[in-house]
Length: 188
Image (cartoon, rainbow, N blue to C red; front, side):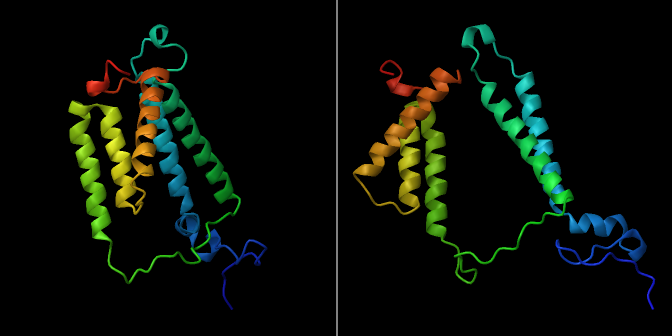
């Protein structure tokens, strides 16, 4: 006869270890390891909000929507998701194991794609100063699409240019985050 006391299995699954079963706090935390993710999300949210609050911005010059808006939304979202995940975990919710992905772990990594993406990112970082964001961003978006397998040579550069210009205008004009315009500075 054992002296362990466990509650009967319920709809959430097998009985959970109790303090009397010798599991203690360590076993309780092991069963709820997702709480670590909650803490990470909460810490990131606090960090983002702290940075947003300490950001030096002249609000009268930029208007109500400025460089602080996106960090506030992201920080609040991180705090909200962390809190909701913690509530779910404490109520007994658990992440399900992957049923299987369309990834063959026996196959080697696709180093060609990794190296192409690395080259595109480094190239964009080098070119953003002299060419400005609209051109470097277009090259970044088009190069990433090519590296990931898109072969629509007529459509991809047009979409990349449109996406780059849209991103430039949103950050430069709406959010007040100045991006380098490069030779297009007078045109844009």
